[in-house]
Image 1 (cartoon, rainbow, N blue to C red):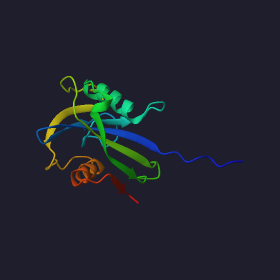
Image 2: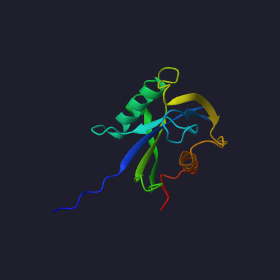
Image 3: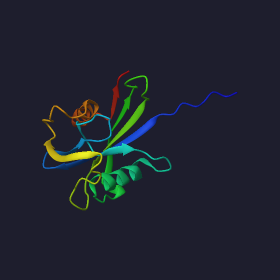
Length: 148
């Protein structure tokens, strides 16, 4: 009997920038990283490519429209499981060069605040691996490994 094939989870993150600032949201109501700031993000649903998943997530979370060609992959982060109930992840971080519409909270049950923050001086309550990813991007790294 063949062994079950290993699968890894994938999540996409959108980095919207404005004059040296990045847009972050405060997580609320999901139980994961409750109350911390993060980038707009989400899991791929399956049957969709990474850019389509990002475009969907930005529409759902921020109510903005983004063209796939305006999304540029800037970092791949591979993380080990954080605990026994977790799994390995591939986190794909995209710079989003343009969007249509003013970002607003599109999922009030999952987000309590939107904020533009200085990309070079992130608040202390940004999710740790997101802060690491933004620092890696600022250095020009294309790959980050965490927890190995």
